[in-house]
Length: 448
Ligand SMILES: *Cc1c(COP(=O)(O)O)cnc(C)c1O
Image (cartoon, rainbow, N blue to C red; front, side):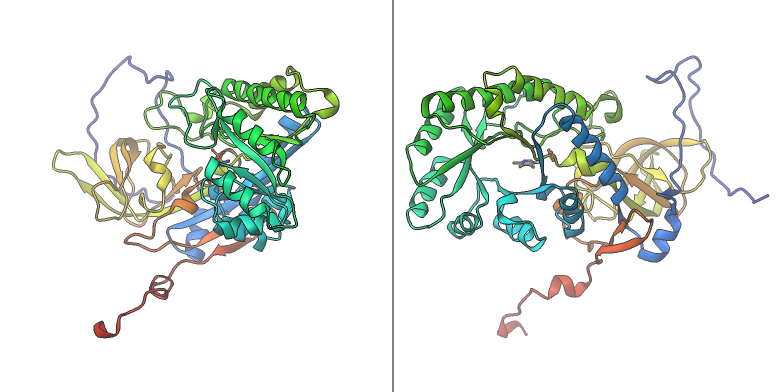
């Protein structure tokens, strides 16, 4: 028998008869492997911290989402939201599944081209598109989603000088009962601005209005607002066909489906409250079918789902640097991964698990990252077992936004590893070195 390791004793107040909100004592489980690969092995091979992505999980989640919509509606298209995770390997997996690309900057647009996405399958969203970006998108026949009147006027000017007719859609914002309302993007539905923009485009012979778009928010925890949004876009589509005898080709419902992470302050865990793809699909498809859109002109439904498709596929592995007692007696644990690498910890209570077997003795613990900053707190207070220096922790559900919003601050970004469907691991982004950072720095002569 292995000798059990020493743990310092913990004093816990007995609260007999009182259970937690689920009626039982929280049990601390450990996560020792990811897709049958030992976490310890991953750390030995790729270092700590390390991000791990699972191709199988991406494909399974995508299949679930796709099924929810294609079983209900005949014309469905997904477009991968680049900003959610634009590591090329991740984008390629989505493209191989049939996803188009959804980009919000010239940089992301270039990445989509690099990944072999043909121009007609790139949706160009966002408020920032330069004239050069627009010219390139027009030339490539991409779908340009106009965000504001200034962009519309610029497009009209550019279109006068191009052979290709820009394929455009407008982004529409609206009251979907989500508050605060996301009204800074696109044209408003209720005050008639969206209709004005449509009229302006329709009388412009150089522009081709092919679609309508909305992106109502992110981490939307109810399917209802999507039904409201789909009904409003369908209403615009019907009015366009009545007035101009023009039938738009698609309605793009944007992204925003919730992932299974738990928002800070939420009473119940995200895995229990997050709607299923089926519920979102039911709400949206019903709204389209119940609208006055004629069956022969049913638009393609496009989805730019980001976080709900990739969050579960990403896991961070990190190590314990030290344990501490704070001045007030609280226990603190310091990890070698912090808020700079886990940006989503600002709004999620990320789950943190030990990789090794632990005893059932847990103590209220504050989990800190390695930064010299007071804000570097991953969990302010969580019942956690006692780990020792160099023990490993596993942080699941970090596939969305962490690998794009990460900050090169104080520490460098670690390896990102993909586990393919055969269980083989590949580095898809190398750990940064000092050179990665200093290569683009320049020294003025007088400081040399
Ligand atoms: C960010 C974004 C998405 C993806 O949103 P998720 O909440 O991650 O699903 C989709 N469309 C647009 C326009 C976006 O800006």
